[in-house]
Length: 85
Image (cartoon, rainbow, N blue to C red; front, side, top):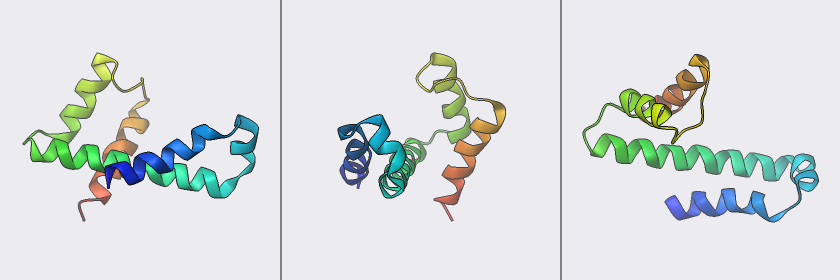
């Protein structure tokens, strides 16, 4: 599954910014790919026995994830929780 999601995101890198911005199907596909990759990340994190919220904050502090507002982190956590239901 990881590589399927990766290829979805990769398709967005093969066109110009203008083409990407004007193609809603491609934007949705890339968005779904990003969500899928993040779900893979959360699944791997939970297999390692870690607390997903702590892991996300830790990655943010280390600069692995870009700085996000509190609501942005909440959105990431919420996205992760949706995949577990």
